[in-house]
Amino acid sequence: MTIAVVYGGRSGEHEVSLVSGTSVARSIDAGRHSVVLIGITKDGRWFLQSEMELERIRKDPKATLKVRENPDMAVSVVPGGGTDAFQAGGKTVRIDVIFPVLHGTYSEDGTIQGLFEMADIPYVGCGVMASAITMDKEKTKQLWEQAGLAVVPYVCIRRCELNDSRVYDSLVGKAVDTLGFPLFVKPCCAGSSVGTSKVTTAKQLSVALMEAFLWDDKILIEKAVNAREIECSVTGNSISAAADSETVRAYIPGEIIPSHEFYDYDAKYTDPNGAALKIPADLSPDGLEQIRKTAVAAYRAVDAAGLSRVDFLVDKNTGFQYLNEINSIPGFTSISMFPKMCDAGGLSFTPLTELLIDEAVRRYRARAALQTSR
Image (cartoon, rainbow, N blue to C red; front, side, top):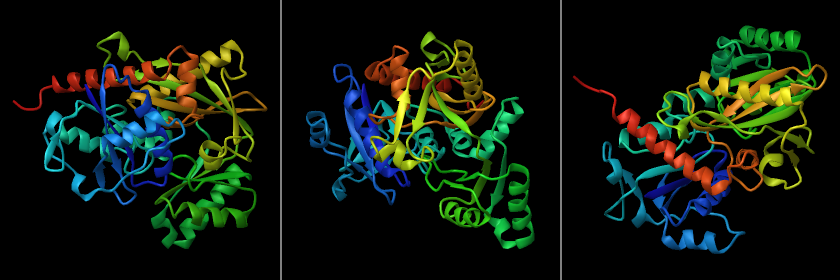
C-alpha cells in the first residue's frame, strides 16, 4: 500500500509535527509499503514533497523533515476521489491510507479528518467528532463527568464574556474562591501546553488569561493539583470491533517527572533534560490497573479510534486519580511517551505504525458498508 504521511500544519505545534512526522516516516515498514510525503506550511498550503526528502531523513538519523514549497507540486483534493483524490503537478497521486502526524488546530481538531472523510480515503486516528471533542478540553471534561469519571475542577471563560466586565469578574472571582491558588490557565483548544501558565497571584492570573486568549476563544482555569503526571497509551476502535486488531487496548502507564515547574512545551519537545520518563509509573499493581481501566473508559466515552494518549494527575497527598486530558494525535518524537509506553507493552514503533494503518483500513471498510441512501 501507499501511505501518505501528512505533517507540518497551520498550528502552533508545526515544529513538533515535523519531528513526529520524521519518526513515523522512518518507521513505516518499507518492505510492505511505499511512503509519500505531504507537507503543510504554517499558512495552510499543501505541497507534495520529492522522494529526495524521504531519502534524506532515512539516511541521516539526525535529520528532520522540512516543508519544501514547490508551486508546481501544490496539492489539491478531489471530494469523493478515494485513492485518486490527491493531485499534484498535474498528476494523480495514488494513496491508499493517510497517516496524519499533525498536532493542534487545523490538525487534530476534526477539520482535516472531515476533509479525509469527504475525499473518501482511509486515515489513521480518531474520526471527525472524536477529534473535535478531544481537542476541546471543556467538552471533553463534560463528557467524562457525564460518564462518571473524575476530572480536575475547573471554570471556563469565553471571549464574549470579556465584553461584560461584571460577568468576566464574576467568573474569575468564582475560580479564585472555589479553586484557590495556585491555578493553571489553559486555552481550551490548544495542545502541547501552548499558552498554558501556572499562576499564584491575582495579577499573574490576569496576565495569563490574556496570554491564553491569544490562542483560543475559550479558556480554562483549573485547580493546580499537587500531582504526579501519569500517562497511558490506548489503541483500538471504540465504536466497532470486527477483529482482534481493533480491540481497545491500554498499555503500560508511564510517569512524567518534569525538571521544569510543570510539564510545559519546552520540557515536552525542546529540552532533552526537560523531564524524566519512567515506565512503568511508580504505582502499585492495583494503581496501574486502575489507570489502564480508566484510560479505556475515557477513550470509549469520546468514541475515540485508532490511537490516543490519556493523561492523568494523581494527587501526591491522597493518591486520587484525576483525568487531565486526551490527545488524539500524540507526539511521536524520540522523547514522546506514546510510542515509549507502547514499546514497553511489547509493541515497538514499526509494528505500532502497522497496527494503526490496519485499523484505519478496517474502520474505513466498516463505515463504507453502512447505508447512506435509500
